[in-house]
Image 1 (cartoon, rainbow, N blue to C red):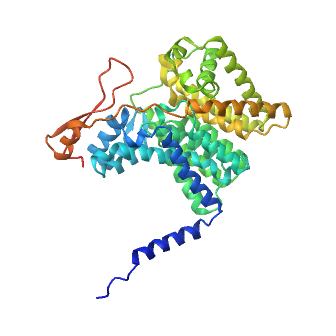
Image 2 (tube, one colour; image 1 turned 120 degrees about the horizontal axis):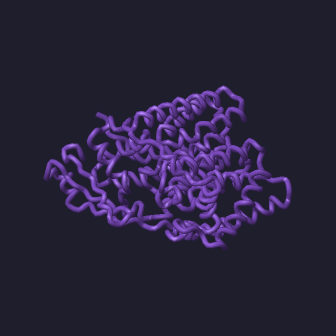
Image 3 (spheres, helix red, strand yellow; image 1 turned 120 degrees about the vertical axis):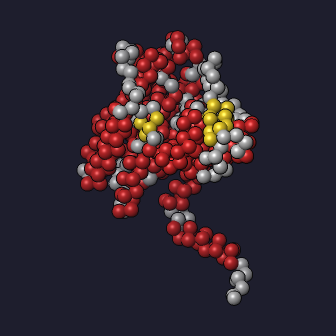
Length: 433
């Protein structure tokens, strides 16, 4: 019998490193993108380090995805919730269910961060160079998306990763076609996965026509067909679900536009913490703040119209409007609040439009610079995200891991609304690891 060769492990590591260098040589676009994505994950988690150090479960993270993945296994992947499918969160929950039970919050948080940054990193591709011709402009959008204001609800939570999937779909509309067959097949599969991960694929489905109209390629037509097929599945699920959209309490058009602008543009101009004060949400902003938002909104509108071809302006404004309208229709009486999750895609469309605009008139270009500088200066106020209550597994986790009882009750983070019973998960100990 031959003895193992000395230094075998070290040599294998060196060979792996060599393969990596061959695939992504120094200075190559792949190496640059890989480094940017890695830094993006770090930047994303830096907004709330406790997302990993004191990982917790947020709302449906435990009550829906955790409990159902433990009880139903892989069959829970195609279960609907709130009227539509959540394939991406379900897949991540299934992977977490194979690991030790106490790892679940960290796996959810880290997996959600990876999905978020992966969706935002689509803008780094040279396929977006028709809109963002330089690496600096692409990295600016990438960092801007990761640092979006008013996303505390969406940060590192399995439940709300579907909104980042919606941003990934928006970026997909703005890309050119891949140059390889593998890339084309991968993109079609990714589009199907993202559309089947929440309702945003249905809201954005009409806008995928823009990509085909711009490229006039067979592949873009295939992407549109895959998108619409997946959106049709989501629509079928919604029709057969108990949930229905509540459009009966929509505000007047003028008020709807005002609230949409305040909740979408307001956090960029005033900073998220100011916008999210209950007094401002319920009673409206002070006059000075409203004047500032209106001025910024007019500048943004001029930049979007004057810095893009009409079709691009219509796309970006249409995406923002459709996403806000969908939020109002879904919320019903609570529409004036327009929670954070409903403003993520409109804010992303606005950010992409402002950075990518190339106005020919100097006064519009100068206005764009002034507005972007203002936004950058306001960002430090929004970068830190308030830590969530620490999840205390207590006897619930011991019950599951040691199988003390047949059914174990695990309390989760308390709800935001006072007077509401705390969220909890009831798990069969014989199905949990």
